[in-house]
Structure formats: structure tokens, C-alpha cells
Length: 319
Image 1 (cartoon, helix red, strand yellow):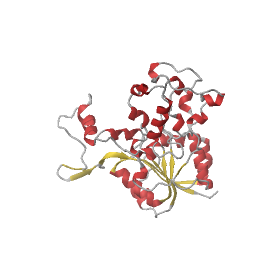
Image 2: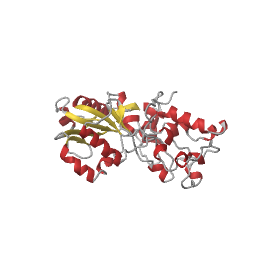
Image 3: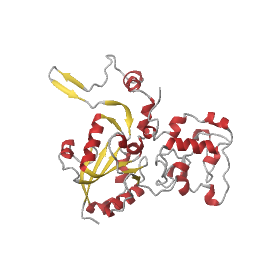
Image 4: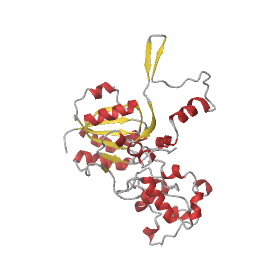
């Protein structure tokens, strides 16, 4: 194990949950800290500036974790800087790897989003119709700037080359611990791979009928979680609750199905799958007893592409 591994972390267009997944390592994090040198962690942990990262020599950082999607010019700039400075760059978490929940913004235009945020919401008081501008001058002499708000969300790999991907919203802290140890010990998979156990949620789910030697049957109805309380211990999908565990990486340990919540795919696609939503649609379609049940699926795009629309073949809503 090397004496010190230089680590950089950047929270881009995300919620901060991926940061917490690292902090939740608790004792494990304390154990590995002697082998890590955190040279950049913005904006949540370290008091560092972008210029500090920009001043570092190229390839001087061993591993960079980029968390969150790319929607602003500022986020794209730091992605490109981290790519230059880091020997290994990881798209860390569902937003960086796939676009994540913010990627649902690709169902709407930039103008639609601004209209809702700055005009249509009930609590908005904006009689002068002010919207964010990239540049403005205050008092005739002070120039203020904001990052440009791009027309759509992009995952990290659509901006720079990415060495590894990690799913989860956020990644489960126990699996993050395994990944950190793999980095320290130099036991990473081939570049371009997802850092994953390779097992689907169904493979690690106690509700899986196959684990009890039971036969699967076709789905006879489509339900939402508000339509009732799932029967404990029984496969959610078999009960009609559309669970995407069969096509989702199970590095979370099947936490959502354990508490009666169907898997929604935040772990990312199982190995070999290029478009998560397409595979999920195929999996569910093949499980329905009647074709008419398709019409009962509420908001199909927001079900099948909830975490992965920007990384999909379509990428955004087609007008």
C-alpha cells in the first residue's frame, strides 16, 4: 500500500448525499485517512478555491471523485480541470455517472425551467421579470457574473473522459469503503468499468423467489406504493409494484426492497447494459401478463429513466 494517495473531490450539480456517503464510513474512514492526502474537497469540506486546484501540476492527483451532473459552465470548467490534474477520474454516484434525478430537467427546455422557477411558482414575487444573467453591472461600475445555465444536463462522461463509474443515490457507505480500499491497494478493474460487485439488486434481495426455490409468474396488475401495502417477504414485482432490481446493480444490498420500496435504478445498469432505461423497459414488458397493462404504468419516462435520461440514447425529450 502506498504511503499517501492524493485525493480530490468536487461536488457539482448534486445534493451532497455522495459527500455524506464518504463521511458515513466513520471508523473505516479514520482507518484509511493515514494513507490519504486530501488536496481538494470543494465546496463542502475544505476551504479551498478553484485557483488552488488550477495551480496544481497536471497528473499530480492520484484519484479524483467528481460527484454530481454538469449543468453550469462552472461545473464543466472544474470537470476539465480535474481531468487534467487527476491520474484517475471517477464519476462518483448516479448524477455524475448517469445524470441522476436532476437529469429529469432534460424533459423541459431551459425557458420552461426559468418560467417555472422565476414566474409561475406560487411564492415567487418577481414583478420586474428578473431572471439570472451571466453578467450584469451594478451602480454603473461593479460587474457581477454567474455561471451559464446550459440548455440540458450532461453526465460527466459527456464532458471529459472518465476512468471509472460508481452508481448509487448516494452510493452505500459500505461499498464506498470497499472502493476506497481497492484504490489504496491498486486493485481497480480495467479503465472504463463500473466499480461494482457485478450483482443485480435481485441477486442480493431476500424477496427473490428464486432464492426460495419458488417459480416466478407474470405480473397481473400494475400498482404504485400508494395503492396498498406490499406483502412482507414476497417479491414486489410479483405483486405488481414495478421494481427495477433485475437490471440494477445491487451494491446497495437491496436496501429499498427491504423496506417495501421498489428499486428505481439509482445503482446504475448491470454490467454489459448500455442504456439502462431501454433494458428496464424490456425487462418489465417481458414480465407483464397482458399488453394492456402497459397503459397503467404512470409516467413511464420518469420511472424507467429517473436516474439515467442524460446518459441514454435519447438524452433528452425529443420535440
